[in-house]
Image (tube, rainbow, N blue to C red; front, side):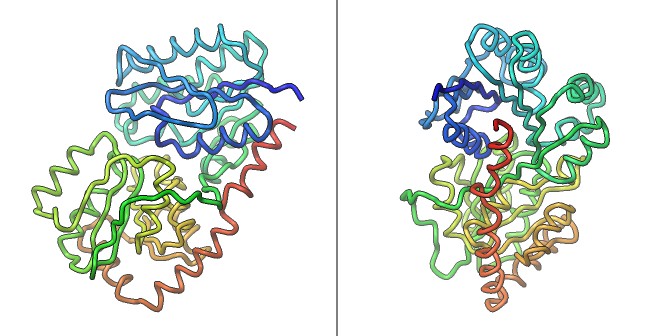
Length: 365
C-alpha cells in the first residue's frame, strides 16, 4: 500500500507535547509518512522520534511578531512541500494550514488542544483576543474535521459555529516502556507531584505556599514555562528548598517513571477564562495511568471526572492553608488512599489511548 504523507504543525518545540506525539504515532500505524513541524528555542533539547521532525529557527520567540513569523514560514513550507493531508494543532497554526489546504485541495484536520481565545494570556487583552476570535470565526465554520480535548469545549464550538466536533481526550497509552529515571522518593516523606507547563493560573504558587503547612511530604514540580523563574524565587523566598524541588522539563519517555513514584498528583488550575474552566489536562490522565490519587480544582470537567471514577478530592478555593488541609487529610487516611489507588487502576483500563485513538482512525477511513 502506498504511504500517504501528512504534515502536522505546532508552535511549540516538540519536546514535551504528549498529545501530538501520540497522534503522530497513531498516524504511523495508519500507514502515513508523518512530518511534525514546530520551532526551536534557546533552551530546546534534542528530540528523537519514530517519525520525521522539523523545527523552524525564528527571528522572534514571543508576541505578535512571533506568530506572524511562524505562520509565514509555515505557509511557504506547506505550500512547497508535497503532502496528502494537513493537521493543524491549535488556532495559532490554523491560518497557514487553512490557506494551503484550500489552495492545494488537501484534507485538513484541526485539533484544538484548548479554547484558545479564552486562555489566561488573552482574557484581559481584548484587542488581541478579538484578533484570534476573528480567525476562529472566519475559518472554523468551513472545516469538516475538528477535534478537541473536553466535552464542554466541543459543545461550545458546536453551539457557536454549528459544526460537528469530535472528542479526543488527552489520555495516555496503556503500555509504558520502562525507562530508568532517578529515584525521587524520600524516606519518611510522601511524594506530591505537579507535571505540566509552569504558566500563570495553574495554581502552582498555591501548591508551593501550601507546603509551609505540610511537614510529612515533598513536592516535585516537573515542567517549564513562562513563570518558572518566579516559582523558583517563591520557593527561595519562603525557604522551602527542603520541601519543594523543580525538576525542569522531563522528556516524554521519562515522565511516567517519575510520576509513578509519587503518592498524590496535583492539578489546581484556576477559573481564569473558559479554557481553564473546561480543561481536562494531560496531567490528570497521566496521574490516573500511574495509579495515583489526585487533588484537583473545583472546575467542572476535572471535578466530574474525579467524582465519576472516585479518584480523590476537590479543593473548594485557591487558598494555601485550605489546600494544605486537603493534602494533610488525604495523606493521613491510608485506607482511603488505597481505595483511590485501586479506583485509578480500574479507570486506567478505560481512559487510555488504545481506546481513544479510534477517533483518528475514523477520520481516515
